[in-house]
Length: 251
Picture 1 (cartoon, rainbow, N blue to C red):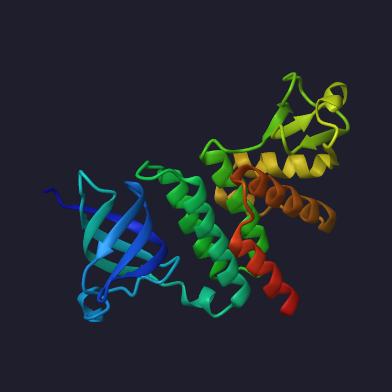
Picture 2: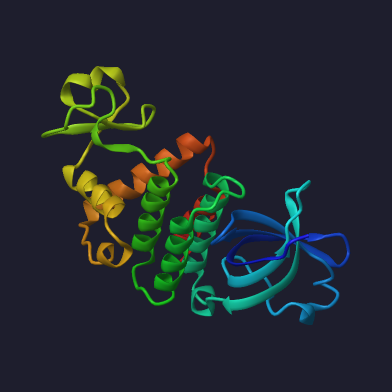
């Protein structure tokens, strides 16, 4: 049986039987993986990581050809992102990121750009004073990189370039030009600045995106569109998004 090594982010973990843990990872070289860590609860020192959600690790595992559950023999912590864990809002944002990785990305399908995006966002969250901006960048980029994105380059119905006022169709998954408004009577007007911000984030690298400014009106609309689009196309509300909203009201 071959041994594989890769960098990986812990999406979530759960207890298995009396002494072990099953962890879901998003890895650099293999995409989303499920791994069994035998005996870690009985002998915590056996692994150099406690596998906290959104921690960054290096894992060694034995791939199983007849099972989606692989045996992890070693897990070494690279970064636990303790500064994030000290902030309840940032921790909630990381929970949303992990839930999206789990919901959107297919099992064992390598996407190094998504892995690098996740690491970049976690590192930026460690020091930023604008965590919601990082979350919106993550949402827009992961939708684009996974092929799941809404269509903002042209009209989703006729394909024409959209000039002037436009609307966003949740059900059709993109912009509508004026002549196609009737294709979805529930579509809503969207600011051109919101469309421009989404396209800028989709098409530029992470560091350049961080300098993008947004006025409060565009930020509010962007939050609404991204959350509505994800909920509609996933067929459910993200649990971590709901928890974060309650936390922000309490704080």
